[in-house]
Length: 128
Image (cartoon, rainbow, N blue to C red):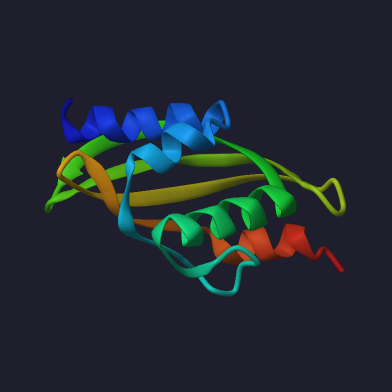
C-alpha cells in the first residue's frame, strides 16, 4: 500500500470512528500537532496522546473532513480540504478550510500536523 492509500485509509477510519484501525496505523511514537489555542490542540505523542487528542476533539466538535486534494510532496502526504460540522456545546455550525500534513514511515503514520483556520474555529467555539 502506498503512502497516499495509507492516509486515505486513515480518513476512512476517522469517518467511521474506527479507533482500533486508527491505532493500528499509527506508529507507537507518533506525534500529532495542532495549534495549541484549540481545546484539542498542542503536541500529542504516542497512542495515548492520540486518544487524548481524539477524545478532546470529538467531545468539542462533531465534524467531517471533505478531501479536496491529496498528494505527496517533500516526503509528506498533504491533504487539503474542509472540515464541516457543529460545536457540541453551542450547536454553532462551521465550514473551515484545512490542510493536514502526514509523515508515513514503515507503513504507519509517524507524524501528523493539522492546520485549520484557527481564528474561524475559535469564533464558533465561543461566539460571544
